Length: 148
Picture 1 (cartoon, rainbow, N blue to C red):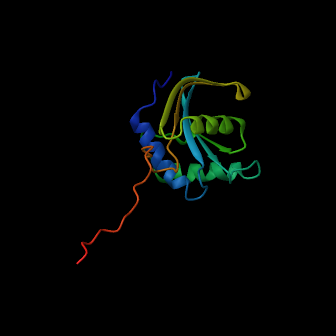
Picture 2: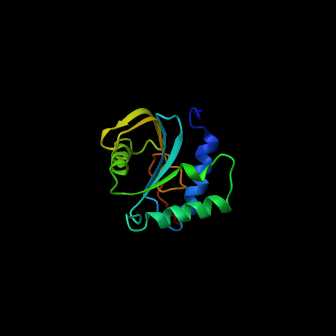
Picture 3: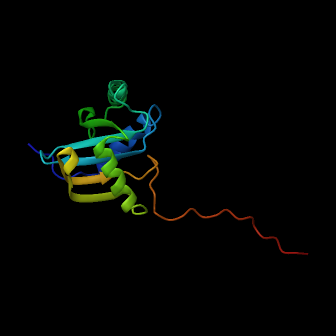
């Protein structure tokens, strides 16, 4: 049985998870994909995740998921990747293309090099935990004092 479209509660639960995971493995970007099997998977891409330590990263994800239970989040939906992973690279390209329009929510994206078709793709704003409005931050200015 499928899950249907991604909902805000899942996105928010994912954000809370990512904020904790980011403390151990700096997250370059993260995204939800609803694949053709109609299940959602939260992919996490970090420069610090490699072939040598991806199992340790999964262990950390499990620890966080167990210590912070959430009815809208299932640790078995998490997939960790290094930033050199073909899917991670493709999503990074999409993020760059739509930069300033974060979060990014797309439908029917095909990733030929990975054999994945995303019925739905949601890319979190980066850095994780900060909701980017796409606007440049305001410069701080000193208050003007009238000259005497």
